[in-house]
Image (cartoon, rainbow, N blue to C red):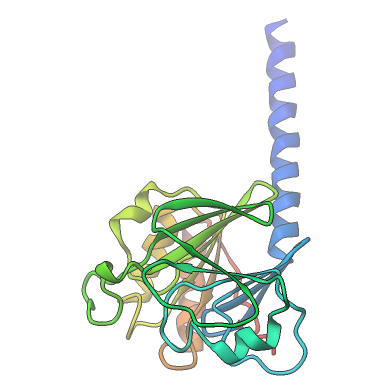
Length: 236
């Protein structure tokens, strides 16, 4: 009897693991990199994070998440391009967003928000060493978005900060530039481990800071940790 229950338990674990992998892969397929820190998530609702320098045809946004007010993250022209009448623009309450024709929703650092049916947590994002770029007192944020039970963490512009060790996410999108954000590729790897992510997607490199080789080296280091790494092509 004990052997029977052990086998049943093993089968349950295998089935649960397979289901989790299927859902994770499905959510991953919905993530599009738009260059710099810009990301689009094509779910039931269309979610953009820090859209920047957008051109051409893009689906209209249901939700736009802004991490902070630097020009490559708060780009009014890109917001105007993808906004519609009932688009909700979410941003840290410490900054000013002046965009007409949308629903503005300021959020607090460390707040949990339900927006269009999505649980979205605003978490801290700041520099520890290079404090002139993203000081903690500015109240900048990253976002954790729950889609079908999968937690997607867009870190915003940040270094490795202590608060990350309290997070537990499935997918992390993080900057690989070493001028304004992470101090090294190795530090970025430690961030992935801190938040217990199953998949890492490097962003915020190749324009003002960081090179393609950094993403390659990042993924090689994560492979040694048995953590999946996806390098996305920029979609324009």
